[in-house]
Amino acid sequence: MGLVYQAVYYTSRAIGHCCFDYRVVNRERIPKEGPLLLAMNHQSFLDPPLAGIACDREIFYLARKSLLDSPVLGLLLPHLNVIHYDQGGSDMSALKAVIRVVKSGQATVIFPEGTRTRDGQLQPAQAGVGMIVAKTLAPVVPMRIFGAFEAFPRDSMKIRFVPVTIVVGEVMQFTKEDFAGDAKTAYQRASLAIMERIAALRCPDRE
Image 1 (cartoon, rainbow, N blue to C red):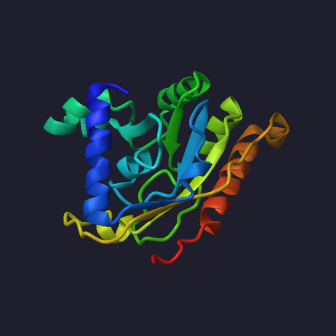
Image 2: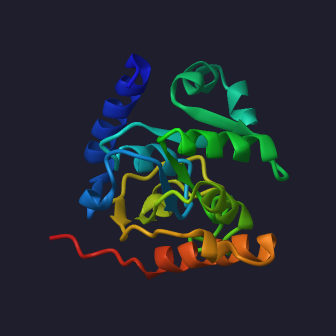
């Protein structure tokens, strides 16, 4: 990890534990090396850093290019393994960049829903995630975040300090046979399968 990445990583961990009683259930299911896709539902702007600190390894992120316009984020993001994309449509260059990163043996967090939920409920999966899986055949770890919507919902400017939990599911492994036939149909089918595994994860009660 670079110095900036390390600083943000450990600062995010401290904030998560102090402000959100942050916990990760089944952290040991996340492989510590090799190509990997972390697939998680998308509730809040808090999701990427909270997904990142669920791992004991460095990961890559997708973020819209407009975030570079922020004075602070514009300085930080280039040091945080961020792959930028154009919002409002399919950005094939970003998807190809993710594929290259994963094929090189790195891990990246992806959000099958494509955007943050407006009501806290799970949204339909988009086909782009299935395409990344098809091109890399990397293991997929389904994860579900609970509490991030209540902490910082999409249309709010106020952060609430409520408990946040990430539950990690069993690793999913796809094969070439899973993508036989029409490509778009196969991509969507894979995305739906991943989203179903995310939806099946439950948040255990806190002691």
